[in-house]
Length: 105
Image 1 (cartoon, rainbow, N blue to C red):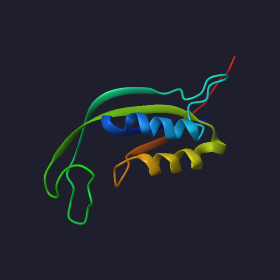
Image 2: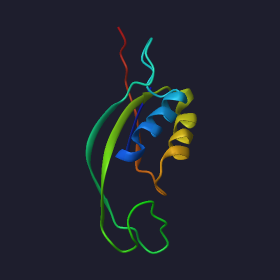
Image 3: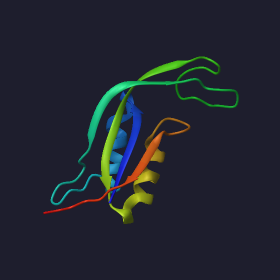
Image 4: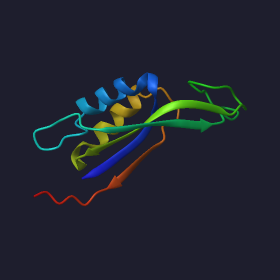
């Protein structure tokens, strides 16, 4: 099992969670589309050659974002990440994939 963690602008959070849920992220027993989100501020400065969704080249940008966490089965990782990339508005998506040790009762 894996934990997928990524940030997304508030304006696109619902669409991205829907897409990754349809791809199989967030399945726990008889539940689906399970995730946890917390709000914060993302900061970045687009450099020359970037094509930012938000912000301007050379200027520090702050965006209200959600940090989303969900579990993903190993066989679904590629499909879930593909769904994330299809629906996320950023040119470069900040995401992490962590292996989990899961001990089910």
